[in-house]
Length: 252
Image (cartoon, rainbow, N blue to C red):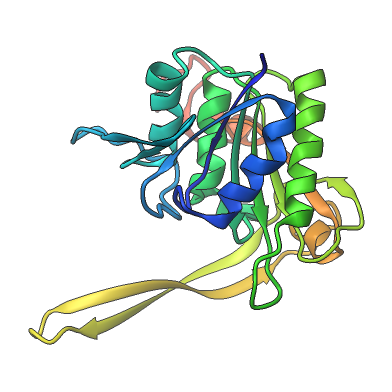
């Protein structure tokens, strides 16, 4: 039996999680281990300084009071007691494009799966109206999941999938986009006279790139970006060697 692990960062009661789970049911035995509460923008965090509690909500459905990466690890060790054939994360309530994916708990859950040697896919959706419509994202997720289960992925590789609102025109294999990221920090004063802060994005100017995930979604296509955990700037190695090291490899 093909075993599929599903998680997210919007919480176990997210409608996106429910839509993804339903779309994957025809492909195998689906087990959900998702955060008890919303953990958006938590990135690849692991909980190391307190115990974690796992709650059974139903048949192969669990909530964990931890992060998405926690969920993947607890699922593998304590729920499935072994590796699944696929890890799926989402459907996220909002896109995870370009540099923003470094913050994403949705993408990080898939990254954790890839680090464990499991083909993994993160799926995020865009909303254009007052209500979420996950039909396009769910279909894209099921299509890609079926293809990956049949053909696999290169080692330590995950797919970051972003789905536009409405009916997608098709799929594009893309690269990670870039944007001018400026953070806004608003300071306020609480009723007791103490400062508190709200963090938000102040600017959102994308660099033009016809191959980017941002451009694909803007054009109405599902963006499929292969990622890996190697953050080495390979193109910069020679420059850094010239900057820092002598010919013997000793620090100057």
